[in-house]
Image 1 (tube, rainbow, N blue to C red):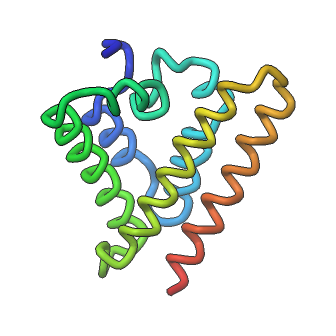
Image 2: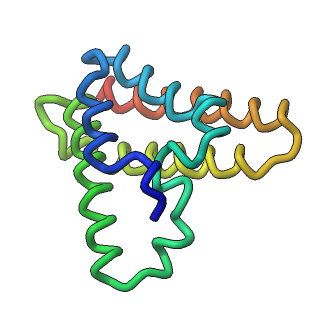
Length: 136
C-alpha cells in the first residue's frame, strides 16, 4: 500500500479534531467529498484509493481493514448518537459506503463539472442521512 495514504490512526485523529455535533459531521463529510481529496488520491483515504486491491488480499488483511473501518464507523456513530452509538451504526456504515463510492465515481469521471456535481450531491445525500439519524 502507498505510504502517503492516510493511516487509520491519521483518519481517526482528523475525526477527533473536528468540532462536536452536526458541525463536525458536516466538516468531515465536506472534507472527504472535496475536490482536493478527489484530486489527490495518493494522500487520501485508503478505502477510496485501494478498495479493489484490498478485496484481492488474503483474509488477515481483510480482517485488519475491517477492524479499522469499524473503529472509524464507531467513532462517527458515537458523534451521531452519543447516548446510543449502536443505534447509529447501520446508518453510519451506509454513509461511509456512500462517501467512498461517491469519491471513487468522481475520480473516474473525465467531465470535471459532472465530477464536482457528483461530490455536491454526495454531500447533500450524506448529510440528509446523518440528519435523519440524529433526529430519531
